[in-house]
Length: 158
Image (cartoon, rainbow, N blue to C red; front, top):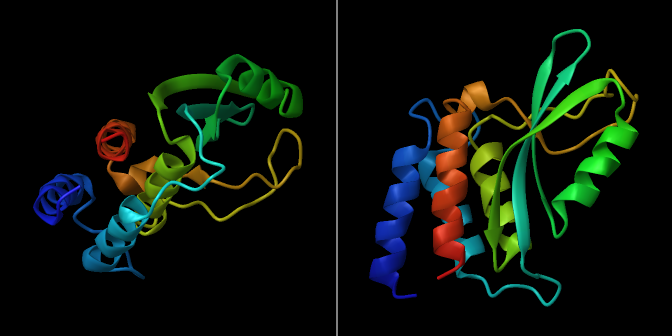
């Protein structure tokens, strides 16, 4: 990918990031980390797969969002439902990509540096410490998070 092309695509990602950004990270810092992750070669363990968004609603009414990757969505959903039987789990979106690990990493960087990363805490349903849960309201809502996911997928799959 040429530097000009990368700069244009990164500018599109920047427009999707929340204006209030982060208390800890600047937009420039975020974009620099995302650019480095995008410019890096896919790892040997990176394979085609899906990057998904789950909506997890607990019995108490608490709603949490999970972004992850898998090569088999049905199997992954069964694992989640078995592990957290007290949660109503819904697949909100899934995108197929050639490099699932790389896409997930870039997405997590965008979310983490915009303060959407939720501090790991014990799940109400199963008491397991789940990682990679997000407060998408801090990111501008689920629609914006899905837009960033698709935009990053387009860049990663180039």
